[in-house]
Image (cartoon, rainbow, N blue to C red; front, top):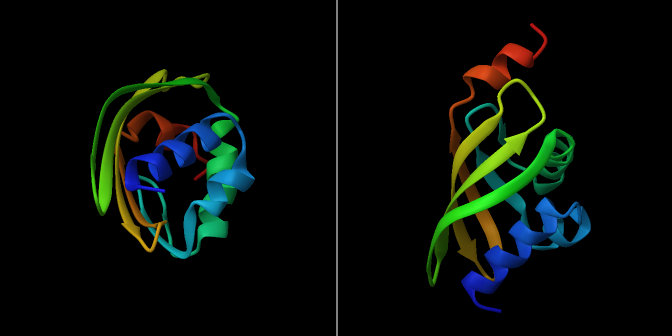
Length: 117
């Protein structure tokens, strides 16, 4: 499987609620860095992703870029929260046919307002 196929498989899986397939695309020691959270274990990241998915109405990919060791996706997350549509940039690093790192960038201002203090 090439990088594009791996990233597309992962993205389709999590956006369709297939977290077993999404998890299978990730390295166990995933290095995730986002606008709200960071994780160093794929299982911890998947648990947070499942919670996030519950508030989504849909995801629309706007642009994508792939090379042999990574990828970048630009997409809109249509949330059922007061945050509304969240424009998101996601950067992937692929090692040994697994996603080893994800950097997720979005404006978290409205989502932070929803978090308990």
